Image 1: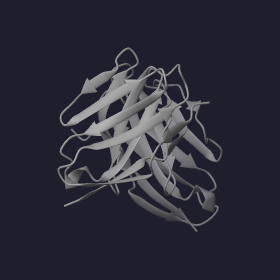
Image 2: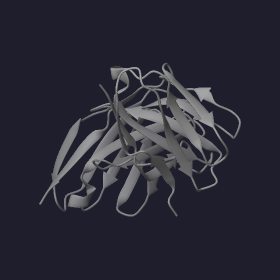
Image 3: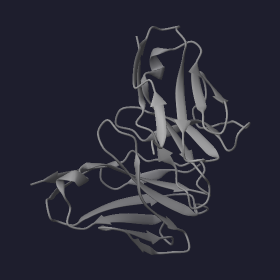
Image 4: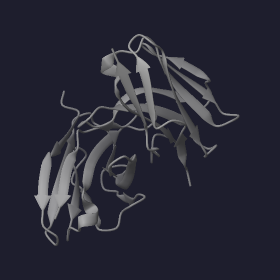
Length: 112
Length: 111
């Protein structure tokens, strides 16, 4: 049982490049989330999807887009990467009441 | 909005001691409180949660206490081991949506 799988694990981009971070969960959870974590800080919510077909902005959505491809997969896209988006990105999934969010091991993204 | 504060950024203990990590929150509407452990290079790992209608919950070597009157919760780890070294986050939530994470407390366990 893999839980939440994120790809890639590491990525270096140049300013202005685009890329998509992939996330898949195998726990049949309805909700999925994208967070970023900057050094020495807690996680901040970028976007979330409460169910297949819906997405909503979190605390720091600017510069990002998301797609809930199906119940299992939730991707995060950076259209034009900026150095301020250098961070570790975590995907999580949760089933709702009595099912706390479970996290992947993150994608470490550096933008030069 | 919600804010989460932790009383100590770093807690150093000796192996075998009991550890207590504290957390203050601001939103009285929070109905679930979750503790996560984050080891270096990994994602947060669920430890234990507690509902707002409870004041204590125990797990394996861990106990969470909730005081809604003063909006405070704590995580107690019994017989702390080197493998407990990590950053611990409390995350208040309402219905498990939109967790609010503080900056975390780093627990250092020395032999």
